[in-house]
Image (cartoon, rainbow, N blue to C red):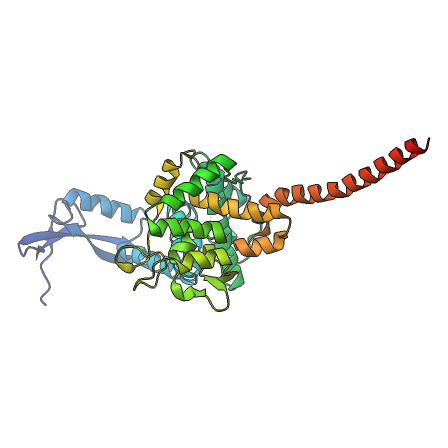
Length: 382
């Protein structure tokens, strides 16, 4: 290709050549010349139409170069070095990508992805764990606490902890040199109904014409299973011969099995079984996405409080019923409810304590009766 002729402008060191734009129309391409460290440098300043370049703008760029600003080639070198350095760093964002890739897909991962993208990526994503200081995390916690519940803030900071712990476990980063402080959460909610409300709910469920929702709610009451576990429940998860139900991925944990008691067996034996693999299928036989509308209709028909969550309430009733029976210990109850943390089960401990107290009072009543008999006997002899 022949060398194009350089044309001078009114500014020393600013020249142009006649080139062609992206639209194949003639276009001036402005160049600048200057010396740096004794070496003559010529570089492109920009195109007239494409970059809105003028001789005056090119002259300002030339002045910047002479005063020490980086050349285009130097800038590219800096960017390349920066990218190479960044590639070797295990930043929070890079750790997150590896951490999320090693997790099972599902609702739990989707929720954590949303939390990371919304609350952690922009503020901490470019930092390595070793670069974090307590103030960085404090700022995140304070900022989120102004608009989110303590529980949500705790979830976000737990996620940050899990990401870093994953990196440490895989020898990708250093252990954090301080403890990530999380907000204290006081949100232990155990929804309850009085005897009259419970009777109305049970009657309304029994009278419901929606066989799917009717049996789903009955199964919660019989087994204490969560909504998500019931929506994922398939017929081949139920072992009628051995008497067990396999619960897949309970709240992101490992698969669990719970007993198929007689009441649950009766509900399932009387439940319609179609071509779908799901026990409570959705449209087209696939996994049902939601039962909220149908369940809320039953709640409304039963005249229950607005804040009462029917499925969670029935699960709570199941747990309360077992705890207050005095026949089920807390460890067994934890297994039946598939709680990963025993502290979740402890909310029902007071019910068992009351039962134990009542049992203990029996001994007191017996002793009181014996004492009264002796006192009465002494009086008769006198």
